[in-house]
Length: 334
Image (cartoon, rainbow, N blue to C red; front, side):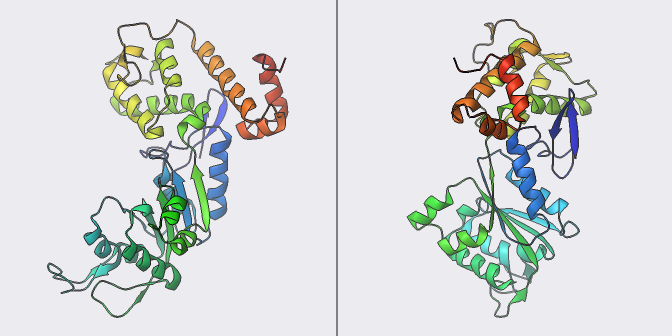
């Protein structure tokens, strides 16, 4: 799907515009386009996909998009967070059990992998799996069959596996806490999601998107942002990524009452620790955006050692477009 913000094309993808995660990759940076390209390439295959990224970067959104836009979209999408279920219960949840397999198993029960038959099974925080379950998962990936707890026969399953984690699994493999063979079996195709601090050009489109989205059910027009609020929002490092930004805007809308403008004092203490003081010198929205644009390009040029072609590719501009912005912000080397 495509959205337009102030005549600048931005890209959003997900299970739907109204979905909670649906804007995690709403933006116009090269990072968004790289993730979109990878999704387009893998969505119609059955190869396992491994997604790595910090909390709040939209890992489940990407998994749902792979499923929802690919050849398995007519089948179920089943997700489980491996870190949210105690290890003794997780085996039964994943693989199912037969009656009498353990105390409390009063009937046969299919596992979540079986429920994803002909669809997609999403293993979130797969790095939290213990060694016994790692071995069983590897067998499922290799044999395309599961064995319920307490059962002797296997059951074929037609499932596309997508896994995700915020952990450094290569380091876990080196420490011996994660099986190397399973790691490479899961990581046939890898998608890395950059944190929001590395795609800061997307912050303003995200602010506008969330402000409009959360204002709509409140029966309010989308609010504007004061100069001070905008300066704080642009300067904040967003350790919680898009999820934190989304929650911040929802909170600010509530704190602003019926106001048409979100002000610095409406923001949480994390962003504005001294609400009684002036957060930033008064300036226009366009001036704040221009300042951010200059800093963004300056950082990109430094990372690429002022190589213009590489810089243009990294930030998603043509070489001519980069040249115009460098001229506008006086960023040529002396």
